[in-house]
Length: 63
Image (tube, rainbow, N blue to C red; front, side, top):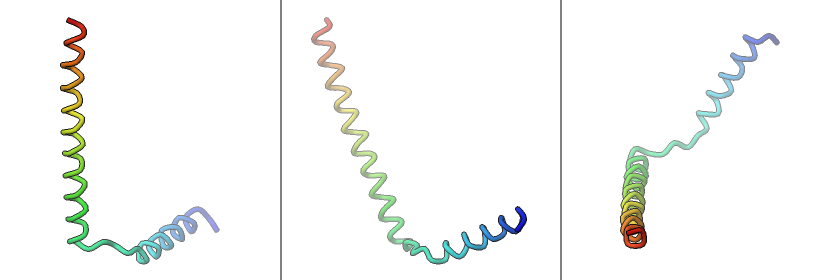
């Protein structure tokens, strides 16, 4: 089996495996995407608040 046959076999098998995947529906994808975006915003807000608190605390101790 030469390199070209191996590559062709690989892509054939990869395509077969992708056919076995249980892909999420559009509704599920939208819901999960919204969840990730909201969670990322909440974490960013939390870290921003912590940053403000630590900066003000350092200002009190340094000055």
